Structures are given as C-alpha cells and as structure tokens.
Length: 309
Ligand code: ADP
Image 1 (cartoon, helix red, strand yellow):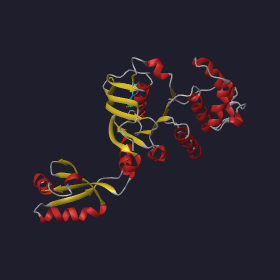
Image 2 (tube, rainbow, N blue to C red):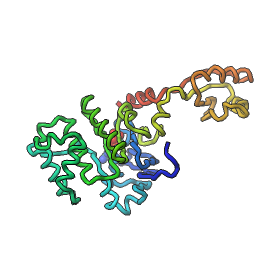
Image 3 (cartoon, helix red, strand yellow):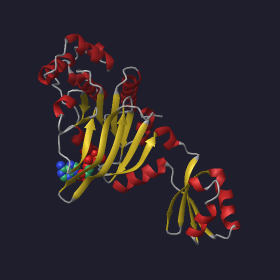
Image 4 (cartoon, rainbow, N blue to C red):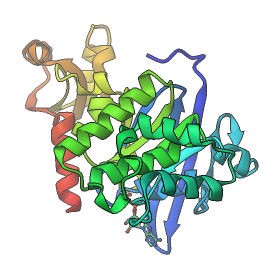
C-alpha cells in the first residue's frame, strides 16, 4: 500500500474532453504515485488514448487540471515533458537502417545530449544489444516495439507512459514487454503508466489500476485487492430497504453495507457470509426477494468489453 507521504507523480483532476458531441473523457480523477506501475484499463473507445494525449499535451482538455511531478502541466510543459518517455502510437523507424542508427537519429532530433554509450545501454535494457547492427526491417513486431521503448528511455526519464504497448504482439512478445516493464519498475525504480484493454496483461505487472468505460472511472484501486475473489459485491433485493438498513445499523454488517438504492442493498461480503446475512434480515422481518453476487472483476470487464465490440 502507498503511504500518504508517497510522492504524486501524476495528479489528474476532473479531466474532461469532448469531440463535438462525443464525451471521450468525463470528469476523470487519477493519482499515480512514484514507483507505481499504474494500469490504465478500458475497452476500445473508453478514452485511454485521449487521456494519454492530454498527458503529453498533444491535445487540450476542455476542463480539469493535470499535475506531473507536482507541477502544472500546462504552465511548465517543457520541463515536465523532458522527464517523460512515451510510446503512443506504433513507433516508426527507418527499416533499412540498423537499430543503433535509428536511435542515433532520434537522439539528435530529441535535443537531449545522448551518448553512444547510453544508446547501447538502452539497447541492452530492452534485450536488443546483440542485434544493434541489424536493419530494423529484419526485426519482429515485438522487437520493433522494444526498440520503441528503447527510444522512449534514451533520456532516462522518471515517468514512462506506454499506450497499449503489446497491441498485435504474440504471447512471447507480450511476455517480453511485461518482463521489461517489471525490470524498469523493480530495478530502475521508474514510474510507469500503462494503458491496455487486456485485464490479464495489467494484473501481471501493475500494483494499482483504474478501469475506465465511456470516459468515466468505474473501478479503481490496488490490483491485488480488486482481484481478490473472496470479497464479493452482493446485492440483496428486499421489501423495505430503510427497515433493513435500520436493523443492520448496530451490527457488524453495517460497515459492509456499501450502497442503498431503491429496494437494493449492496454489501461487500465474503461468500460464506451470504447465508447468515440473509437469515439475519429474515429473522428481523425483512423480506428478501433476491440475492445477486455482483460479477467479479473479470466478468465485469468482459461484459463492458463485449458491449463495446
Ligand atoms: P481508447 O484509447 O480507450 O480506445 P480513445 O481515447 O481513442 O479510446 O477514444 C475515446 C472516444 O473518443 C472514442 O469514441 C473515439 O471514437 C473518440 N475520439 C478519439 N479521438 C477523436 C477525435 N480526434 N475526433 C473525434 N472523436 C475522437
């Protein structure tokens, strides 16, 4: 768990962006702390790229604020961006030139002072050192993707933003990127903001995550807690929710009651507690019409993903 003193690297507040009538990002709040591998999850069209493009000042928000490294992104844009490495779209390289030459060209254009030694270091880091002389056109998709990450790392940024870095990769290629992310985080202490539409991919590497859908945050928190299947959201439909609430007020169930809406009470409880809670309510004169365990995170994610496809 993050302590309250952990340094905030990204602080997004009430961020919104519309394209004509379409609300792509809707009042989004995100906190990313130093050392996080932060999973930014959502099905296609959820608003991930739009958010990332705002983080990189490629587009302007309609509303809201973004602080990175504690500074206002729009006031101190250049000094902030200098300390960020990102791959946003599929990186573009000169296929007929060797990997190292491509990175030399990028280094020159970047305006950062990047030595040949540093270029070899990042090639080593992404597992391409042995192929440094190979033409990029001979690289697999996964190798090109890792070269893209190498490019983002050249100037040794503290924050790395990766937008769907494994799109189109085979399982082996995906694993190589995952291992690289873990290495960057664990050994080099980088903060990583990773967007993905694949839950499995995020849960492998991220410590915290947010799921967005239709531009809005739906689920967020510590990855391990969110995936802890023993903690279910269970909805009890009853004849009189106010009465039920009153009955539970002085009991251990009170703090497990998360939401009341109409005749429905939603609890965060474990599987084995369902029967005793039901018994308690019935004993005290509440009629229980239905008990529905809310979908697990995987099922929820599958559901919103299917809705958008
Ligand atoms: P994701 O990255 O999660 O797949 P996007 O941020 O790319 O989602 O898109 C969010 C929504 O905004 C989608 O409905 C998309 O069609 C729309 N959108 C994104 N960019 C533009 C744009 N430049 N003009 C109009 N609509 C856009």
